[in-house]
Image 1 (cartoon, helix red, strand yellow):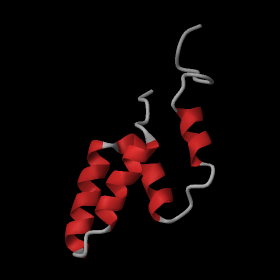
Image 2 (image 1 turned 90 degrees about the vertical axis):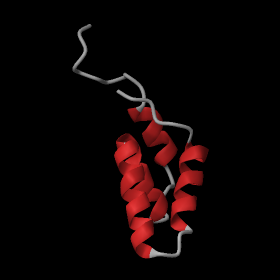
Image 3 (image 1 turned 135 degrees about the vertical axis):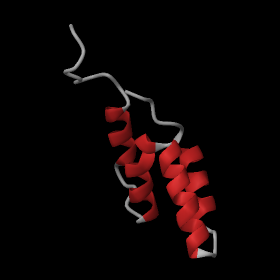
Image 4 (image 1 turned 180 degrees about the vertical axis):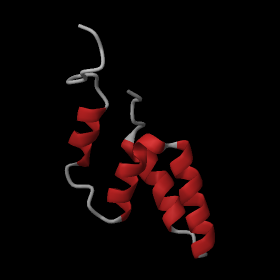
Amino acid sequence: MPVVRDIEVIEEELVGIATIQDDLTKLERLLAWSSVHPDEVVYAIRFLSGRTKGIDAWIQQHSTDQGRTDQPE
């Protein structure tokens, strides 16, 4: 499972996209960002909608191999 990048870096990139005035350009940048960082899209949606409370724990949980059933023991 891929490791999610530093949250501050993700937020900085998303804030940069959010400050773009032209909606079409903003959409294009957000789609491009999402295609480059598909594992971070859930975080981006929550961040951009203002609901990041508790997302750090979710990222930590899903960034580790704990609980994975697809690996042999």
